[in-house]
Structures are given as structure tokens and as C-alpha cells.
Image (cartoon, rainbow, N blue to C red):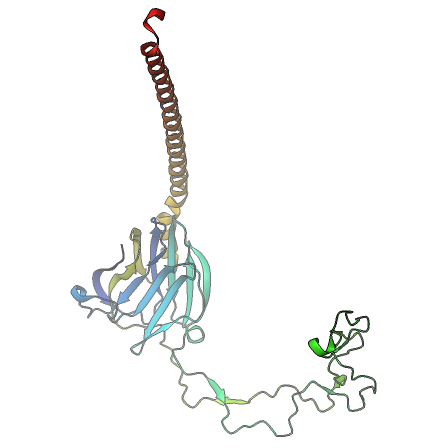
Length: 345
């Protein structure tokens, strides 16, 4: 518990240029995890496996991450030109105790798809959902809102006039209050009636609102093409993929990783998912139900035994109390016998 883990495996380096890249694995948080990673990293072939750590350069990071109730997400992080870029969308991961299949698909048309348990949960464009590139459009630095541009939808009615009797004080002396008979002006000072809320008070007067005849709507800053933007058709591509690894932190250990797969065939990945996770998911749930039932029975037996032990202790205490009372009675009889006159014996 509460430690970093670093495990990796090397394979023949390859590039996914011109091909689909599929990364797939199963993750099972058997320990009811409260904080810890369940993701995998794909590294270039120059990784020093003996010194793999959190700052080691990687190509892709993918998989679930849980930490408390606030973080339950699927990480999809790409390294682009030496910088790690996080997905802009919130992809929620599974947080139960069962095995789940996580699949990332990256296509040569710069699109992607995230699947959990062979079901699509997110998809889109690499360029739109990550900040790899500067924006295509920027606000025109030369454009300025005209000085006479009126964004007020409503204005005060210039013809509305405050009524002459509007201004009334918020509080007035209580007309029903009477000076106490024992009030002494010399001793108590001049008597003043208490103040009450004025029923005629109307608050601050504000003129009625009317549609603004000069209203032009909210001014929108015009945009122009960003001179710094250059499209990149190879956002999806990595020239050197050579190591797969688990580089993660877990507060509560016990996560089970299995069925790692890197391929260029989406259908094959789905087939493998069905043959591995798909074949075991129902038996796994059935086994969990059986385990829960066994735990329930065991717990009930322990509670029953504890209750019987408690009742036995109470019986013993009652017997001890009875023995004590009998002993005290015997002692009292002996004392009375010894104290009686001999002619009574």
C-alpha cells in the first residue's frame, strides 16, 4: 500500500504511421480502491526500463484513474513534440470491484475512440479534443467595438415620472404607543414613541423599463485566420513504439491488470475482448455473489455466537449472584447460632 509501481515489457519497435493503433487491457480493482492509478503507458524504445519513473518520457498514457469521490476518470494523454496533452473531455471510468475492458483506438484520419467493455463511451477529433495546435481562428486584434454600439436590451422609460407621494419614510413612530404613566422626563429624558414599519413605504423608486430602440445585440469580436496555425495530418502518428509499462501510484494496492494488447486491427481487438473479458464477466459476477452470500452467512453465524456467549455470561453472573446470596444467608445463620444463649441450644 501507498507506493509507486514500475513494471514494463519490451517488444520489437514499430511505427503506427498510416495505420490504426489500438491499445487494450483489462483492469480489476479487487481491493475496492479509493485512490490509485489503473492506466498503462506506451513508451519509445529508448526507455531505460531499470530507471522507469513518473518523469520518464512516454508516447501515450491510457486507462482509469481514481482518487476519492472527485476523480474517477479515464486518462487519454498524448505526447506531442515533447509535451503531454490531456483530453479536454471528461471520460468517466468504472469504480466497482469487477474486471473492465478499456480500449483506445487511434486512426490515421486523426480521429479516436474510447471504449469500455466493448462499448463506445467517447470519440471525436484529435485536433479538437486536445490542444496540440494553436487555434485555427483568433480574435482580430484590429477590430474594436464601435463607441455607439448599444448592448442594453432594456432602458429606463424617459417618460416615466416618479409620483409626488412616492417618498415616504421606511419607519414611522407607532401612533398607538402611549407614554408610560411612570415616565419622568427629568429622570428618563424626553419620551419618544417606538418606531414601526411604515405601511405606506414603497422603497426606492425606479422608472419602468422599455425596449431599447438602439439595441444592437451583444457585440461579437470578429475572428481571423490564425497566422500561427499550421495543420498537422500526423497527430496520430508515433515513429517509435517499443515498450509497454505500468508506472503508477496506489494508496491501496491490489489492482489486477491483464489481457494487454497492442494491434492495428479494431475488429481483432474487439474479438479478443469478447474472448477474454467477455467470457469471464458473468462467471465473475456470479462468483462475487457467492462470496458475498458466504460472507453474509459467516457474519450471521459470528453474530449468533457472540449473542449466545453474551447470554451465557449473563447466566453465569446470575448463578454467581445466587451463590453469593446463599453464602451470605448461611453466614448470617451461623452468627445467630453463635450469639444465642446456651440454654436455648
